[in-house]
Length: 448
Image (cartoon, rainbow, N blue to C red):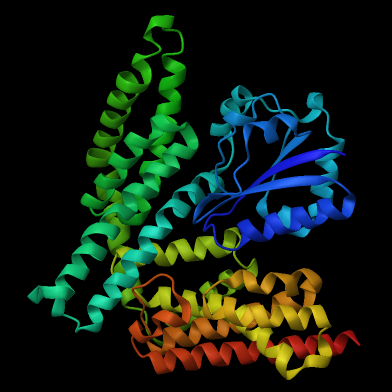
């Protein structure tokens, strides 16, 4: 019997990571193979692969949207697929791994590292975002709790002031450096971390914000890769100096000078202009922004487009613009909630398995886990995806029109008390969910 091992990892480490693991395990069992899947989620690595298990494995499957270290798999056949591919077509992934031969698929660590700078813009970005999210979520919710004592209560010190120091002065202050640091780490491994962290810190300091942090991360990563090639011809005795002296000194200096004298001020101007424009959005313009963000959140239910919209909202929170984040969360909650509602109102349009999935979708929806809609979309994409996009667009647009704001970038129903105009926000969420439920029912009726 063929033995396989796998690693799954998605940007947030919440839903896709575990859904992919479950899909691979189920597919392997159906095909008569054994597999052990290590999940690298928000709680860290779980079900960790041992050296013995890796040694005995016929092949290694890496299903990830973030950078996964491959050093321990050196010499093994490695099959790399996107996280969504493992969820949607797990049997094909398993078959590819089982039928693989080293001459076709093996990637040694050296080969992987050589190819890394040429590929994976999204993967590098999501590696930074995934490591930043815990700080953003914790900091955002703590700041929201501080404001619950009164909008200016933190200025008087006491508990509100302490909460603001923890959330704003602690977690949020680390947000951009961590984003930049781990983008650089994804590109250049450990030597990229120092210049990335410094570049991110300087981006925040000069007012370049979230966008500046992204640029600093990529800049740091590729500068380190350039230095690796530049000093590759040094004598063997100098190998110990490279990671502790040559790379950090030159890369931190280069990134720092570029951020201060070249990149920082123009990006700061762009961020300030974007912030002023967003703060001035009213009426139809605000509705259009909310509608677009809603469409993006529902389009791939936690995939790349969804994460771009989410990252956009997170960056604006750091800049002090909080209305788009409220629209984004409403739009992300609507797909699973709307489909769960549909399974209750229109039971005859769904099979037993979908009705059971609907029960889980309630919980996932109120928790702002858009991936709860995936089982429905996988079974009937042509009817489900347009329905959830319409519902999310309505929810996002209404949230913007109502003037709802949110400083906590996650939390779902549990942070609604901290939203400005919470009642109107719930109305936007309810209307979007109803639109999804009735539209998917109508489209399924056409099927018959």
